[in-house]
Image (cartoon, rainbow, N blue to C red; front, side, top):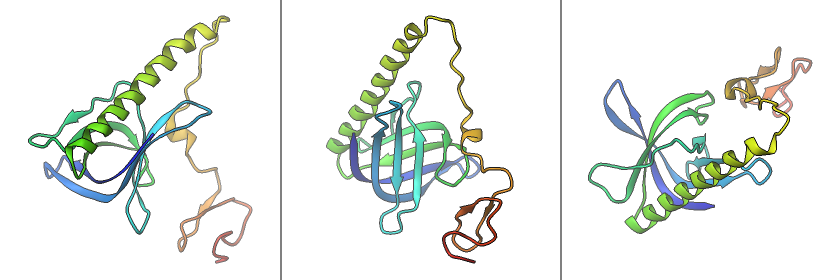
Length: 167
């Protein structure tokens, strides 16, 4: 839905300052099957994740103090560091025009999510409760599986050597 080059920062509460997380293309993506939307950003050249979390309708996109090219928001579950972690993030673009486009698309995603959730309760007329899986359990490794120390690929418990590197 949106893709543009930007610089991403995260707020470190202990130091009370913003730390750079990476430079690359920040994307707002939509899953056509589930309707869920997320923010995804990979660092340029190394392609390491620096942002990976769902967009929720209760997220507040706020302007960063003193800059029209920057936006700040918080997420409860960012998966960019291979673990679920609450983060306060800021993104800065090259121009204020691109920053406004990002804000419009972000809010459009939130509006689409609000419209989806208002339709779902009417569809279930038998009174079934929708079970929401906890994100941590959804991405939890299978019991007995192991991670290769060299290539970081997760392998099944019955395999003796890594499927990717053969070690």
